[in-house]
Length: 139
Image (cartoon, rainbow, N blue to C red; front, side, top):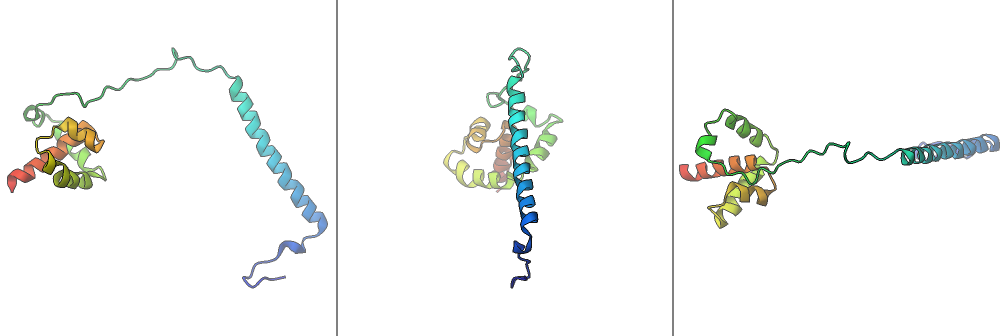
């Protein structure tokens, strides 16, 4: 029997093949559930990793660092930081938002405050502030 959409109707299957198909589906479902249950049981019997064995790396926040930009801009890594910040897909949006909204309200904002407001790293906020301030001075 052909349906208007051109699909074949499955009622043609005999009772034997239909029961076999149904049995296979039930068996597959049971096997999947068995694998899930077995995995849960296997992992629950394993001893938990003690906190002394696990190495936890504490990352220090860079937002508390005081940076003198005159010295920092002469460092060879400054160009790498600029390139990295500018390759962020959100860089243009963050730059525009900083220029239009944040600098208007608080022109003396620090890089640390900007990093907190934008939820970006201190390096990114340094680059954004530097570019916004250089644009303002050139105008």
